[in-house]
Length: 228
Length: 361
Image 1 (tube, rainbow over the protein chains, first blue to last red):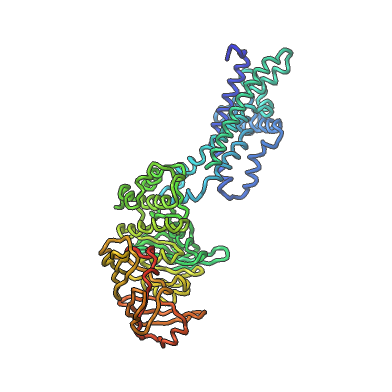
Image 2 (image 1 turned 90 degrees about the horizontal axis):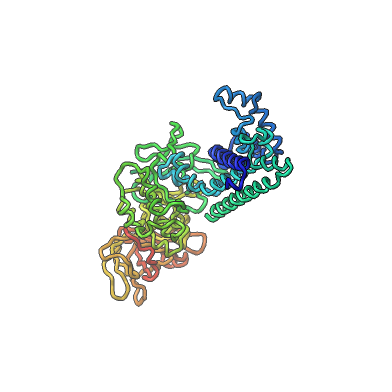
């Protein structure tokens, strides 16, 4: 693999995988919470909340990236807070790429989990309650296991989206090899220089394989949920 | 163990205002669909919070609007067998049963092995709910509810989704639970046959209110009840004992008013049971009839009469120490000059008593 890929190309693939995996894992609990709130609760501002979550799906990615830069950049309020409180800097760092990828993938993840949650019959949860299970135990022993295929499908979808995230990432954290140059950014960079087509093509092939694999896995799991 | 319930609750287009006591044994909550039966049971389970009132099991308050008490569902220790069973699809039967015992209260109760025997589910343990028949599903659901060692068991039309032969499979299990476990049950049903066979106490709900309540024998031989039940299904329940099985396919049962010959029952000789005799299967005669093909002729005394809207009259008769009902035409009642106190003979066709209506006492 490393022989076929140049070190820069390999670096981009490895970084993309790392960014996508971390973004998916970190956003998973939030995704479950948001999906649960949307599927099961009625609260004031629910439509606004729903809209905010889905905004990255409809906004031009470059706009999302710019907004992230405004909020989490060195001068942004959230960025200054994170720097002061935790010493974490996101702008132009791979952690920023994680944030951008997570935000962009979040709506897809929430949608998939929410759909799966709607197939979990609340009657089963009330049956568990009559058997003595408290709300948290019900969630862990009934809701979550029944949700699992949908949860995995949502995570895979989010992972694939995070792998391919380009616009918001390049706007927010730029295109620094070894730090923020993910696979799509690397493809873009190779296409900007003469003679880079071969390297770009190799990355494109890897990208197609990873994305296809993720999509197929997600479809398979979605069908398993539907069968239940 | 006694459940006392007094609740008021408004639902869209419907108001619930229900008071009753459910002593030990099986209390049947009987009424047409939409009468509020499931709402009452849900209120006991805690799945529905009434607007006002009080629900208590002996001295333990489950709900009291004045004291602001509403125990959460999972702390009530009340088992619930739902109409749709609600077994967990991602667990085997064994895991479903184990789930019941996971948060079980620390009190004596049937073990897994005992329940497997009582409900005949031992051979199902490794299966998933999707591989069970309707009757098996309900038996497992009953077992799972009992594994939680409930103080009381709620059953919401557990047999409604089953066909007649599956019902006949489960009824004996419910009778055994009633007779062998000391768990009081609140049993929702709109089937008179089930009520007649299982209930010790009957609560009739009508439009969200209790129309009448009392012991099953009194209730089913009550003329007021006929309106609730409908003339076709009206019929008294008599305690009976199996005396002998005869070679010609008949079983001889003794009731307080005499002997009955009925189609062979599966019960052993000496077993106590109850027999339901439909009002429309009883013919009355002033004198001892002769030359009649009917085998069962019991002396009886008219205690009450009630004319219906149509040409029929429902007669309540004392037969031994019990009551039976007879549905005859108004014309016959007038021709025979039937009035309370009149001695008659009740003729019951042996084949007219459905074997399913012969249950354990």
